[in-house]
Image 1: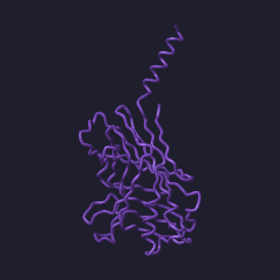
Image 2 (image 1 turned 90 degrees about the horizontal axis):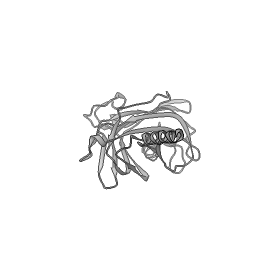
Image 3 (image 1 turned 60 degrees about the vertical axis):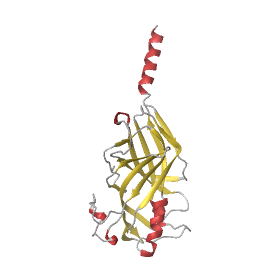
Image 4 (image 1 turned 90 degrees about the vertical axis):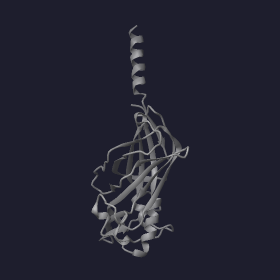
Length: 248
């Protein structure tokens, strides 16, 4: 099977083996032909920073994100929303994949992927009760992190939405005969507890909550985009033709 692979430059990272596969559902593309839609797969991969951003004072055991509003932004300005319902990304240490039914986008040239780590509305149903303790703003969360600091357990609850924008460089060009596209993102969890000046951030301190949220926003990066194209049959035909010529 042939694949077109677009790698994106990132800083040196030590990759953990945790990989989370998220399928995307639905699409709002105007005039899109469902028979020509390209299936989409979104993957989150945990990474540890190799230099300068390692939070040695914090051990993260689990991080749950409430994700919503996944969009592909086309070069012509169109926005294709491929996920409308909130879903949970569990960045735990269990090595279990978190999967949702796969969706699709129409063929075209795309410049950006966006999604929101979402704080639910006061009357919004949530797929996991960990994101809501009540209806007030202080009782609803977009991200919940548990772990240990100084050998003591902690639970950090982020009380704001965090917007993510991932540029495709080079642009992502999807064709009608492409079988699927897989976007792999890195979540640099260690960087969540290190400030802009390299200072240690404490998840137990309310005063550090805003800085941690900013660090989380900056920690996601695009690792790669893989397009599974439709050249396999052509390759097989070429092989068959070569075998016939050899026989002749």
